Each structure stands twice: as structure tokens, then as C-alpha cells.
Image (cartoon, rainbow, N blue to C red; front, side, top):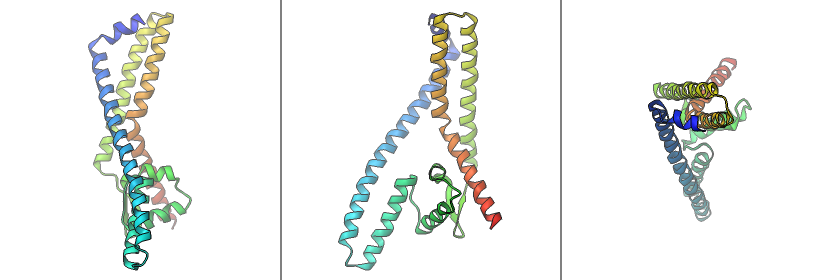
Length: 201
């Protein structure tokens, strides 16, 4: 373990640790916002259910509340809202059986409706996000590999324990930081499936 401590005192190690901590903090804050948003969504659904009962005498109001409830259910499942056209297009797409719910949920931020059909819009921002995420994971992987090489250069029980700690740290880092890249890759897969469906049709 002493070997690991000495290695981690180096400048590059401090820089890598700083990047890892910043990435972890960003992910943590994002998770807290998502948790709070989920709580608010549940309260909103309860309120809409109450309003639906209260507005039964007015067909126009009842239809409006039902539309709002559909949008809220959509946001609860996919993390976003959408127009009635979007809801119908998304439902039709899912009912084809070619897309899993997790695929559509992960790629929901890139889904749109064009001419009544569901499409995936991946702008330059998505590609930047993809390559930045991949780049950070690769750079951290190279750095961890260099640390492991130094540790295995002086084999001992403490070196192996330190190496295990580093590998666990890297896998956690890759999982959190690489999450954005996974979302973009899933969105690309959904786009390819949609294009294949259109071609087949």
C-alpha cells in the first residue's frame, strides 16, 4: 500500500484524481436533481388524477386533463414530456416490438417527431459528448494502466491490494463518466433501427 501512496503523490495522479472527483460530483448532483424530479412527478400525477375526477362533468376540461396526464406519464417513464403527436408516434414505435423500453428511455432526449414518425436527432453536441466521455475514459484507463505497471514492478501483497483498489476505482469511473457515451450510442442504435424500419416499409 505504501507503493500506491507514493505513486498517488505525483502531480499526474493529483490531476487524474481531480478529474475523477469533478466527474463524480457532477454525476451526484445530476442524480439528486433526478430524484427530486421523480418525487415532484408523483405529486403531479396524484393532482392530475384528482383533477380528472373533478372535471368529468366538462368534456373539454376532462380531455385537457387527460392530455396533461398522458404527458406526465410520458415524463415519468421517459424523463421528458411531449406533444400528443409525439406520444402517439412513440407508442406506435414501441408496439412494433423492435425497440425495448430501456432503448427508448435512454435515447428519449434525442427523440422527435417528423411527419408523424419518430426520428432521432443527434446534433454536434451529442457527438462532442460522446467523444469527450470516451476520451476521458480512455485517458484515465491509460493512466491507471501506468500505475498498475509500476505496482506490478514491485510485486508484494500490498501491491496486489493496491492494484485491486485502482481497478475497482477505474471501473466505477468508467461506468459513471461513460454513461453519457452509452446514451448517445443507444440513440444511434435506435436511429439505425428506425431507418431500417422505414426502408423495409
